[in-house]
Amino acid sequence: MPWCPGCDRFLSPATVSAMGECPRCGSPVDPGRARAPGAAGAADAPGAAAVPGDADAEAAPLEPLPWHFKLLAGALALYLGWRAVQGVEWLVRQF
Image (tube, rainbow, N blue to C red; front, side, top):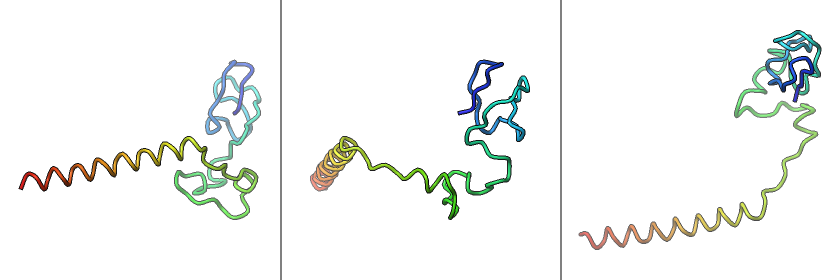
């Protein structure tokens, strides 16, 4: 995350200039993972697939889902399944 010591604030990587300067005060900042506009193009768009050979995609593998998320998803599936059964029973009784 880029930090500007002159403004004493964090910057969005997209707001850092191509020269690595703060857009507000012009002091040099570490651009972090910011890329020049058009450098990676469609690879930065939401939902776009990673470009083969992209160093960021290869360096950071996805972590597995936590066990409590899996438990919550399973409980939700059971609950919604039971509510679907109750809904079908209600419809059968109505006719």
